Length: 183
Image (cartoon, rainbow, N blue to C red; front, side, top):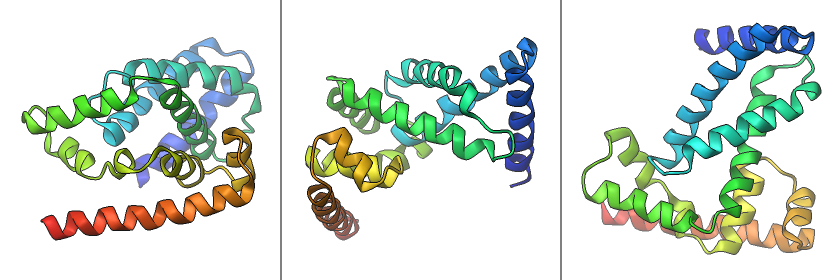
């Protein structure tokens, strides 16, 4: 918790300095954030091939949005909102996302993953959901979009998004209950 607070203060200060033209502060900030993004993605998706590309895409998105950061506000929510949104956009654009998840599962079966990655793999419920449910849950529950924003991104009505969220949560519960029964 103390480290999180230190990071928050340091990153906010570095971004404030960077917004005023301090290139050294900006380089330090991007280096630190790159490590945090990669660790964040690995903890959620395991050893998939897209992590390095996604990390770079997130850093580019942060660079593009750096002028929107207000130093009077917390840095981490701003930062992780960009990371989540860019990651979801990138994963949705990848045709090989399902293949990456399969490779991730095979790594688990072959015993090449760490215990932490094993736990992440076990909880990859999203890969078991129908794409319609997965998309709305990723946008609304993971990325934090409102139903209106998710509806716009997916080209659906708000009521259709609400229904899919409800059904997706219901399906997620079934999957989790089945995992508990199998153990």
